[in-house]
Length: 279
Image (cartoon, rainbow, N blue to C red):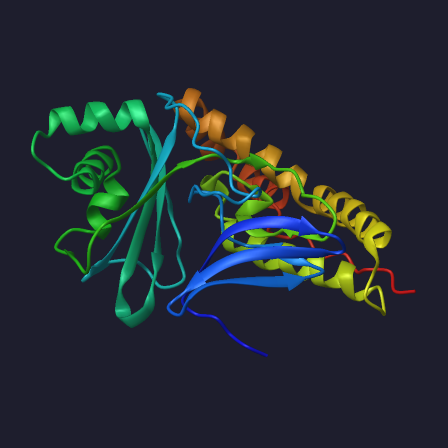
């Protein structure tokens, strides 16, 4: 087995029974052939591959992601609090080396207002100041903390369900579908979709032909949608509630905390992985 790293896939085409991948590494361009290709490149990076989405027109409602790590933060062990603020939401989580990570999403139009109110401040710092001003728990957790490393940014984030692809071409992770970051299921869906695809492929004990690859693609699509589509739709509903009825949503949770357990179930946090039927 040969590992190409670092390496970039720059084109993909069907060549008979095979998928032909044009790649480029430190030694120059090359072409790889395989009966099965798994697209696991995420959804934010644009590119020429058929599984990468074209860059859409900008929209005021685009969600832009920011992340930074801090030292000296005061976060109780084991907690991963959700922080809601006008125009966006975020969360705190323990990271490696005693650091605490703050990740958030903010609407493009809200980001413009926040930056205009804090002229000269970098985007990440402006968003953090806005969130801290609106969320006492975040303000207290990061009081006296210092940022460790640069701000990271990505986006626009476009939650939704994407097409599975053609014969022998499969998507996993955010390339297949993406829930709103509000439910914190990105890594879980990435790992589980890879597991689901592996189970679906391993149910066949020999290298499948083109017709069988089409059937496997339909089976994977069916199983993917059965397992992940409900949490994607639930995340849309939760994100809408926090974006359009923030105070009502907060009051509902305060009055009936069991809503959080219901939301966790619908976001997939308690969903077991289905087992493939082996021939």
